[in-house]
Picture (cartoon, helix red, strand yellow):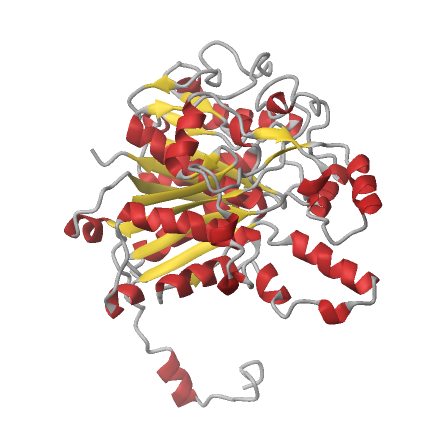
Length: 465
């Protein structure tokens, strides 16, 4: 019986026969998943209506940063000034805050007494989730409905500003002042946890951390939970609050951020343009309510679109750089198409991941040409990257851009790519990103998200009309 030991247990022949006599587990039929609510906090504004309006009108949420944006209030003024001066990138896409319409109300979401354990990235998620749930008209009060509602919210980095402040306390030998809420504030899964606790949702409670693909993976994973019958409704998306000294300094040292446009912030994020030199760091949150199709129909819910395909892959190439041929992106898009049952020629719009980096944008463009072939160059496929307007929202990017794709289908408008004055030579003829928002019938749209570590995710949405 050597080799059959497991934790000191040696099964008899009779027990082995018993273990091998189980029938295959039941395979539930896959269920269809639709989007019934959306919510956003972005550099373009707080709320879907404000963000979408500004996006379609070609406005930009990128601005110059100042020392106060670094969240170093506990440091000496000269340290803050020195840190700011050392940063090579001095532009960012920051959520506008205040008490006016379209602004993020810090007093409401961050500063009330019961929110001491809530870091900024969690506050953004709570705000976006609240809008999405109200939009979906889903505020269950019955216990069985709460048990059939789950949450899947991720983030890329969590609260780096809290870590920086805690490190200052240690350096100053003042650790007794460390907040007892320090750990709950920095844990990434706390965004899901707080949403779950606020509304009493007792379905799956999930959190993905896959760098800049986090938001897309969170949505795709949530859809699969519904497809396989784990739950009927999921609150899904991504969130990020990365405008702080340590986050910006880290990406500067990585040479990932734009540095050529510090004096022209609105021109800094330029996906697919020859003048691109790195991404613009951003923050925000995107949350959507996903629901099983018949469940949504039975309660008369508004349906924005169906999540028809979800593809994932790994580059297996480099910690930060994509393969120049975009092979990981090709696999993710191909797998999303296969799951959806659609032919590449049936896709009307692509919201590209394109972050405004020299290598990443070219790799994605190559991947799109590979997957969509003649359709990509036929002028029938519209393509854009909305990061020219929002910057790169890291862990929230995939969720916010998935919502943009859903809204493009719902409203029949494909958003533009800002700052595309000299397209990369890879583009020619009919294969060209949109430079102005375009009214068109969009029956299917694809949203790409790629992250450090070679992680890739693709979501494919279709109209239900």
